[in-house]
Amino acid sequence: MSRSRDNADAVTTVPSGVGRNMVINGAMNVAQRATSVTGVGATAAHYPTLDRWIIEASTAGRATMSQTADGPNGISANCIKLDCTTADTSIAAGEYFLLEQRLEGQNVQRIGKGVAGAKEVTVSFYVKANAAFDFALEVLDNDDGRTCSKLFSTTTDWVRQELTFPADVDDGSSPIADNNAQTIRLFFWLHGGTTYTGGTLQSGSFANQVNANRAAGIDSFFSSTDNNFFITGVQMEVGPVATEFEQEDFDVTYQKCLRYTNKLVFTTTSTAFGLGYAESTSQHRTPFLFPKMRAVPTVTFSGATDFAAVNATTSVTSTGMSVSAMSDSMGLILLTDSGAGMTVNQPLYVRAASGKFIMLDSEL
Image 1 (cartoon, one colour):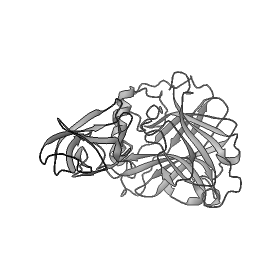
Image 2: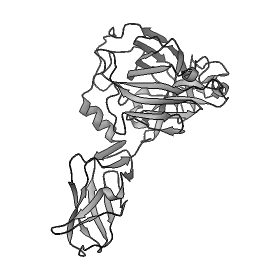
Image 3: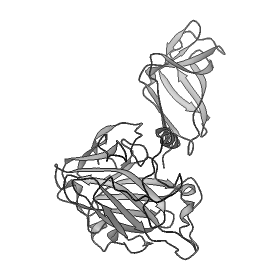
Image 4: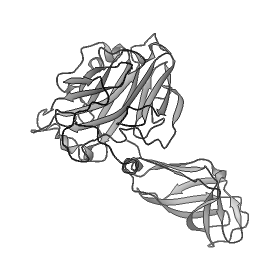
C-alpha cells in the first residue's frame, strides 16, 4: 500500500508509544563526519555525511550530499539534500545509486519477519525534488534475501509518503537473526540500470530477491545537473498506519548514533585526555574509554603530529599514533615520538591540538 500527503504539516495523529521508529537519525539532525561532501557516487559504499545514512553507488553521475536546513515546518529543521553535479544519461546496465539505512537484527525483532505472526511495517518520510520524479523504496531482509519495493513520487513541495509493506511469513523457518549484524536494509533507489529496472517491480509481497525487479519504473536522479532531492522525517514502524513522525530529543538521537560512529573532536587548544605512562623513552601508552559501540571499532586519527605526550616537565609531539587491546568500549592509544626525553614508567597524558579528532567507526 502506498499513500502520500501533499501538505507536509498534515500528519496522521494516532496514539502510539515512544520508541516506535526503528530508523535512527530519521530527522537528519546528527552529522558527525561532515555536513557537506562533493563527488558523492565515486565510492561504492560509504557514509559521506549524516550519521546512519550510507550511499551505495556505481555510476558515472556525481552529487553533493549535504545536511541542509530546509526541512518541513514542525517535522525537522534539517534534511538530506542531494544535488546532481555530474549527469549520467547513458546508463549502463549495472549502474545504481542508493541512499540506504542498515538496521541491526536485535532492533527489529518486533516485526516478527519470517515466521508465523509476522507483521506489516509502514515506512513514512517527507520528500521533495526540483521536479516530478518516480523513485522506489526497497525493504530487504538481508538474512534471507527476500525483498519488496514500492514506488513513490516527488513534487517541488514537501510531501509525506506512507508506504506499507506486507507481512512476510515466508515458510516459518527464517526469522530475523537476533544479533548486532545488519538484517533489514532500506534502499531509496534514485538511479539504476536495466540490471535493476528491467523487470516487474516486486511490490505486492516479499519474495526472493530478483535484481531486475528491485527498482523497475524509477526515473534517474542523474538525468540533469538541475536535479535536487530532499528527504527527512524517515520513520519505520509496525503496522499498516503511519503515525505522526516521532520527535526525539537531539541527545537521544546522538547517543544512538554513537553506537556506530564516535568522532571525538578536541575543541580547545591543547585539550588533555587519557592518563598513561612512558613504556620507553619513545613510546607511550594511554588507556581511553568511550561509549559502548556496536562492535570493536576501527580507529583513525586526524594526524599523528596533532597529538603530544606531556608530563610535568616535557612535551613531545607524536610521530605515530595507533591503538591496541581494543574492546567495544575501551582501548589503549600508543603514541610514538622521536625519543626526546621521556623517562620509562613516568606518568603522562596525551594532548590534542584544537580542532583535531579521533574517529571510532563501528558501522554496519
